[in-house]
Length: 244
Image (tube, rainbow, N blue to C red; front, side, top):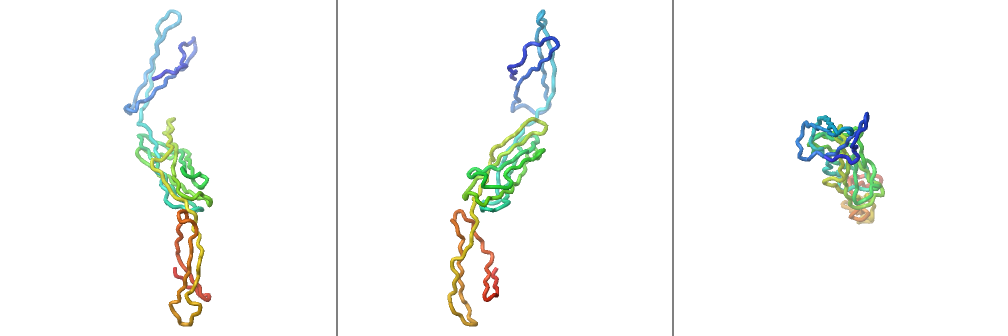
């Protein structure tokens, strides 16, 4: 227990003074009801008679509060420029012995500037989201990848703030225990390079005529998303043959 340096050492007649002391509660202190007793002794300035007064207050000691961002979990390991609403789940845990209110949660990006992304990058919760002791919740963010996002890998982290209800205790976590990651790719571009038949002239009733139609997914292989071919439609003399 440490008295404040500015505490007064005398009181003139009819006046009141405030005395301040700073102290800490040991991490090994038992929980439950406790009492603080304050006793003040002094003497008068006329004949040095002893003076004394005392008072007590009661308080309740709770287990320590705890706020931890456990992990950041993107739903995809590969994302594309221009892609919207990619889900990123952030797991938040209360390892303490009292309720906490989650007030703020933000996504952080370690390898690329946050301007590469849009949508839900920061969430505040007026009034807080209650997290009970020894429990966790998941907060989901919908992230948009901008059309000009920098290509390549990125690491996704999170920071946040919580508080203890009815107490002036603020809890902050600046980094997740387990971070997430993804790779930003450019969208695939399909274009055909060759379109040939194995015969220039055919006759009626002829079969097994080979058509070769070559398409390309342009772009560097390490940063371009794979293009899936869902169907091919060939139209000959206005008649469609859908091979989906």
